[in-house]
Image (cartoon, rainbow, N blue to C red; front, side, top):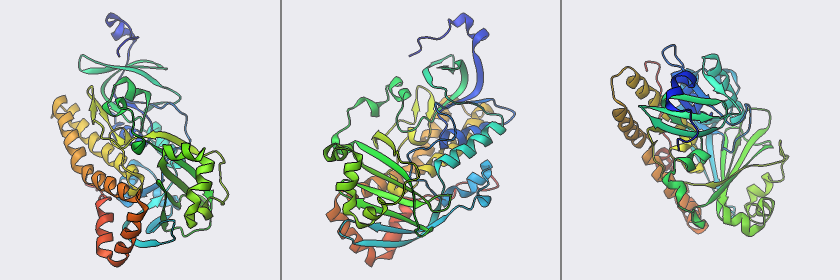
Amino acid sequence: MGMGFSPPYLLEETMKKASVGIIGGGLAGLATAIEMATPEYEVILWEKRSYPFHRVCGEYISMESWSYLKHLGVPLDEMNLPIIDQLKLSVPSANEFNQHLSLGGFGISRYTIDHELAKIAKKKGVRLLENCTVREVTFQNDSHLVKTDEGDFQVDLLVGAQGKRSNMDKAWERAFIQKPLKASQNFTAVKYHIEADLPEDLIGLHLFEGGYCGISKVEGEKTYCMCYLTLASSIKTAGGIAELEEKVLSKNPYLKQYLKLPRLYEKAEVISQVNFSSKSKVEEHAFMLGDTAGLIVPLCGNGMSMAFHAAYFWSRLAKAYFRKEISRKELETAYRKEWKRSFNKRLKMGKILQRLFYKLHWTEQAIKLLSKSKKLSSFLIKQTHGKSFYHRSD
């Protein structure tokens, strides 16, 4: 990396500068941009697409993020969003488990929440460059030089929030992307919006051989998000996504019913090579946030909240760095430590539950056990959810 930049003696004349540069305008990137967009700091964000647009996502946000999103400026109280506090878990045999979610969450599409955050970021003065791809990054003289479709930039702190997988992961030669994925670790995620008449307070997790599907209400009349994760090998064996849905997903009675419902956009949103391997939190002095730092299994329903939470504590550490209270090395160490403290427990529990859910016989037994013990089921749910992390006094 590092090739393609202007010669050093021209940098001062040609390089555009900013305090913070952010690669990727998803939840973590946008929240970080809004947090850092104060008169003291110039913030630039590069997003390869143009808002608004759909993303593959379960579109259920834990209530732990409600107060934080209001802090960022999202008018949640005015958006008539569904509040979700009931869980239904089912398997193809028609056995099911129902549970009240003490914390719960709310439904909102990525089409809406990303666009809303992008508007807030622009209003706060973030230089948001849409349809702009970052091509190369290098670290030099205690700052990052970033080559993009819109020219070259020099930033004091660089955030990588480019999502689950991108060209920058390859450019950084990140460990998780170097190793070929085993068939048992290579997942594909598929999302639709469907028109349904289902309980608005319910999130369903419906298992099938080799995967599971979530369905829950988002904004808009009768609009529901239907998103599933499956082994890529299962799609190949079935002969395609449509064939997988007909041959495999439809063996679950709930999914058989939902797959017949009208789709609000016919073409599915799909992302392949979904990787749940551990990821580094800092790459060449750039800070990884959101899915770029670590991907939680969808059945835990908190990837979106993790993105917001990471933006929250990274921004506070970054401001301490700019105030010269901590060094870059201390900033990197503190970020790694806080990320581990905040998320490691739920990531570990999520991986355990995911392995369980891919063995339908085990899941059958688990449903019987959970149905008999509400204490156990409540305990497991709490292990995959965090607590509200923003308070007005912050």
